[in-house]
Picture 1 (cartoon, helix red, strand yellow):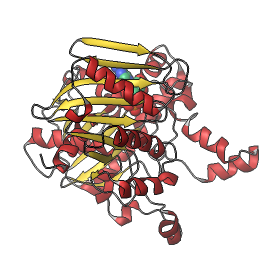
Picture 2 (cartoon, protein in one colour):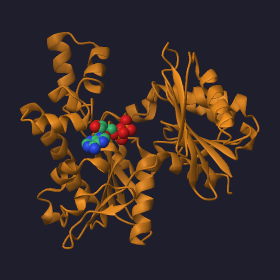
Picture 3 (spheres, protein in one colour):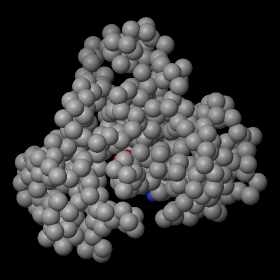
Picture 4 (tube, helix red, strand yellow):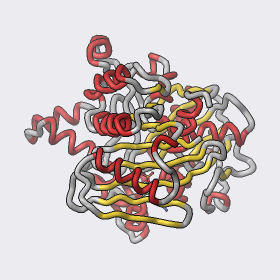
Length: 393
Ligand code: ADP
């Protein structure tokens, strides 16, 4: 059975087609800059690449172009050949703790969650609505970024605000990157041949988050009501004293939009050293840039604090997992995050750490009580697998 996975954003749509019998990717691609003059569609399959440059004014046309590319490349004959379409949906709120078959009611519920994810859920819904119209006979499944965190207990997901902000406004920790944390957890579990492992998973990309996993279930995560909380990220601040916002508003007359932009777009690595791309920050630091070095130190210090606190609430750890663009590729960040953690039973093998991870690699030393893994994430395959198992095929 073929499953198409769609990640529909506000100006781009990423897609990947899987043959689930062999769990292989048949093709992947992207429709970029939707609504702009320079838009284009790209597909890759085998060792081939095709790109079409034309004005793609909306999601409907973008998805039509995707199906034309899949058909012209002889990957499918028509969309009805698909066994299912799996959609990434960012926010499932408290309503969705599992993947769900999409119908009118589900669409309404995702719409109700728009205030919690005003940038993402509308774009995800655009993709869903267009494909439901284009392929009414193909089952469509929503897989939520928040769902993996549904097992977090109330004492960990509640904020110490008046209880009414939870009841009336839905203010609580939801967590994100769920499909990635889930995917690497399953891979680590398989590798250790143990079903219910204790782990800390670190998804370090442009956005970054950690999850605390006890007996195979998520019990805490660093992102909160929104993806802003927790780790230092490319352009996001992560944790800070909320009173900084009142202080800056009163002192500099910043309004809500100024503060939103400051924390989400102009902070993190970029705020400290002017660059949000970790490769550049590493290069700058190697050339002696003090702010870049500070940004790197702050980045790994925050992670170490979370490793310590998660270790305290999980108990004996089986493993720590690095994933995401930085986690999978940045050898030096991994060293900084694990440095001086021998007292927690965490010790890297610096030679093993020097490898490229095409699949799971163990970078811990022989003495290390806790395994340290690098696992390339595959959120699209995870969405395809969850879609497949929901449909019971
Ligand atoms: P996104 O959250 O957008 O999916 P990715 O998971 O692709 O992001 O991660 C992007 C980050 O990974 C960038 O900061 C990039 O610099 C970093 N990165 C990618 N390759 C390397 C590398 N070889 N060394 C260090 N950082 C890397």
